[in-house]
Length: 394
Image (cartoon, rainbow, N blue to C red; front, side):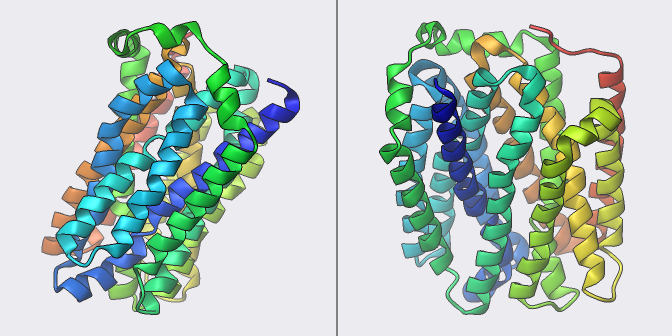
């Protein structure tokens, strides 16, 4: 691939990641509006988030082997095209059960975007440049997270929350056209790889046979459980407990993405200064402090700073795990990254379900305490393992 072709491909997968994250985070500010429309509890409304996460995780068992068989960009293109239809179907649904079903379908189609994009980066970018390239890729991921939160909050306050899903579908369509017209999907089709002819079972065996791979999959699942399980309920907390409008809650949540953008723009310097273990440990400290600060009442600046720190802390922790994941099993990188995402989102689905029960029975405060302390302990554990140098050097 030429340098220009590589740059175009990175732009294409970054745009796809923007759409993917916007679709994922769109529902967070919508929970109060949906619970009001269908006369259900906020924890019950969160089924639209957990259904998305469960389907996203399970679908990785399909997308990983498909990507290793047919090519990562080509498979990503299929996922983007399918996501247009799925998000339109969510917007057209009038029953809560139907919305949950189509959100699950949307989660399944979205599953083939970010993991395969990262696998493609892992395959085409050297390890020494990979963390900074993934950090730049995060601009698309975080831009989508910011955009999805804002779109969801504005649409909910305007009383037309379904419009958000149609807008996401339109963005996916534009992304697919960009990929198609630029010829990137054709390039993916033309380039073969000997690994594509290996069976899916062999790819799974390659990943699970390595102890470092199993460790990374375990800790990212735990991260997803405690972090994203609590994150989904922050807009509802801001609206119900601190009395912000849904638009204001969505704008405050956008500071999460801004924290991540700060990391993306300084990743190289942070890595040189702190090292991988230091990044992970510092990220855990920030996450714990952010969740506890969120419980303080007062000016809008308090949750804004807390959520900003949460975004910075998350990506200090998570981007390090992502970089490690791209190197787990190079011969089965598509499957490895898909299993990484599978573990993250299955952990997230468990976390959302558990968090919904906690919120319904005990309120928001215990949820944020549990999330903050657990993530601090997790980061200390991961940093200790990294310091011992227990990683796959394939």
